[in-house]
Structures are given as C-alpha cells and as structure tokens.
Amino acid sequence: MDIDSIIIQHKNSILSISDKIYNFAELGSREYKSSTLMMDELKKEGFTIVNPYMGMDTAFRAEYGVGSPVVGILMEYDALPNGHSCGHNLISAWAYGTAIVLKNFISSGKIVVFGTPSEEGIGPYAGSKAIMAKSGAFNNVDFVIGMHPDDRWAVGSKALADSEMEFIFHGRSAHMAASPCYGINALDALVTTYSAINNMRDLAKGDKNIVVGMVIRDGGKASNVVPDRAAMEVDLRSSDSSFLVEFIEKIKKLAKGISDGYGTTLEIKDLMPMYTEYKANRVIDGVLYDELEKIGIDAFNIDDSDESASGSTDEANVSLAVPTGHIDLKIGTGLPGHSDQFREAANPARAGENLIIAIRAASSAILKIMQDKQRLNKIKEEFDNGK
Image 1 (tube, helix red, strand yellow):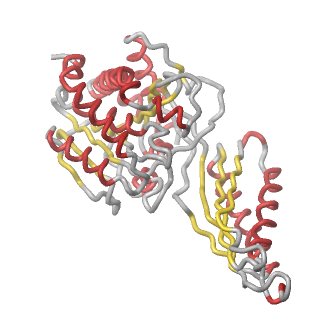
Image 2 (tube, rainbow, N blue to C red; image 1 turned 135 degrees about the vertical axis):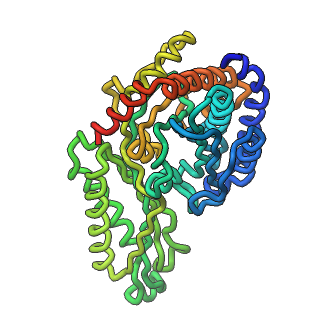
C-alpha cells in the first residue's frame, strides 16, 4: 500500500470534513463544533486525545504511535466574521489527512496533531500556538509542519511580529454646551493619542518594517455629552520582535502621559500574546519543495526570496520553539486575504484537488524526514545554530 492509495481511500472523508468546518464557520475561541468534529474523527483513527488542552476548551492534542522521532502537525479551524475567508477549513482537513496517511507507514515514532484555536486573534484563546509554545507543548517534538492556503504554491514562511492592544480612556460626562468644564473628555485624550502614535512611526528605520493600525471602537454616546469613555484597538507589527517590545513600551508611556494630561484614567488590555517573527527551517522546507516538484508543482521558495513579510501568525512562535516547516496551498490567483473572494476560493468544492496534493506532498516529506536520521540531525543543527 502506498501514499496515493491511502489518500484515495480517505479522500471523501477528508473533503467532507473540510466542508463541515467551512459551514460551521466558528469564530476563534468558540470553535466547539469544529474542534469536536476533528477530535472525533481522529479518535476513530486510533489517536488518543487530550482536551481541554493547556486550559483551552477548543484546543486539543491528538497522538498516535510510540517512540521517536516525533512530528507535530498544526491544525487550525477558526473563521472570521465573514466566514472562512482565511481558509482554515482547508488547514484542518489537511492536518487530518496528513495524520491518517502517516499512521499507516510509521513503525517507530509518533504523530502529534495540535488543535490550535483562534489564530486570527479573537477571544480568550487568541494566539493559542503562542500560548502552547510558551508553555512547553513542543518540548518533546522533533519537528513541526504547518500549512496555509494562498494564491500560489510555496514553501517556507516569513512573518511580522505582532501585538494587539486595547486602549480605554475613562473620563467624566457633562453637558457639552452648558457645563463642559465639569467634564473630562475621554475622546479628546484618545484622539490626541491616536495622532501621537501615528507620529511615532519615525522612530523605526525602514529595516524594522513597522506597521501601525488603529481603529476607534467607542467614541461616546451623544454629541451634546462630554464622552466619559473612549476606546481604540492598536495593532503594532515589525520584522524585529525585540524592537517591537521596545516600541510597545514607548507607545504605552506616550498614551499614559497624554491621559494624565487630560485628566483621564487609562486602561490598557493586551488582546493576544505577541506573535513573533518567523524562523524558517530550510532543510524541512527543502524536502517539502522537492516533494511538490515530484508531483509537478513549481513552488515558490519563500526562504530563498528577498520579499518582505506582510502578515503575522502564531505559527511563528512555534518556529522559535521547534524546527518548523511550512507549505502554502494554492487555491486561486490574486486573492486578497480575509476577503469574500478568498472565502469562496477556500470552498473544498473548488480547492479540494489541490488540498489532496498538499496532503500527498506533506505526508511524503514527513516520512522522508522521520526515516532519515541524518536529515533530522541537519534539521536540528540548523535550528540550534540559528538560536
């Protein structure tokens, strides 16, 4: 029995799973149907399940096999408000399909599927992979593979470090015309802070690739009342996580000073763990590239390119904890991320054939690594040398 015959045997169930997750379209930290489906399907295949995992109800760890080496497969299933416009329904089906192919070929070693909620940063489990990495989930894993839909076939990854916060200014209400002097305008403090943060961009050289995004969530209730509460979300990104930590502290001090000047009180909430920049493993990505090439896929090698990172992911935190490889699955051309067009392209009725190709390539690549101790040593050596 070979990889292709195993995939053919399970193809319908793989596509059915992707379709169900696609239609569940559950937001991050609320993926109860999606995570339950994935756990049930893996349990049927003989995987042992730990859930809740690391204090998260919709996270799980599924294991099959014994001994070493140990491969981790990253599974995502959270959607966005406009549905699966990031294609995580394909990631969950890919992780499931890859795991059940591998279980038929390993005589020694272990497969670990990590069910990871809220990659999109919504709710209390936002950035669950960052939580897992910090808590040691990958300590006994030899290497990890992740996947994401895209508008091209590719291997490797680059990512910006990312931090999202909420700034809440508390003031005092009063009549805007009759007695504004008795009020404390929280919106004025927020607007001044908004402008000041924009002006802080000059602190970063171009090589830090700083990105500042802000949106006002609460600006008051009526125009004739001094706003006693104003809130905004601030999203800060950089290609250098050490710089980003320093930049965040400057922003917080700046906001606090402005708040004190207006007489408001400031509350700052971290909305997710900080996502780091990505540490690629060229040995793993090289094996993935070769397996795609054998299937006739001319993949783009992100690791060897000079293109800048443009997005962020908590998979990057995993890449700093354990050697991590990545494959991008093509589902269309020129697709803007998080758009309705991307959601439509992620429908397994359209993306199913390429999903199967990604499972085939990843399964073959993982088996080659697990069965080649010398190659695995090179993977670990590259990782250790890059620390």
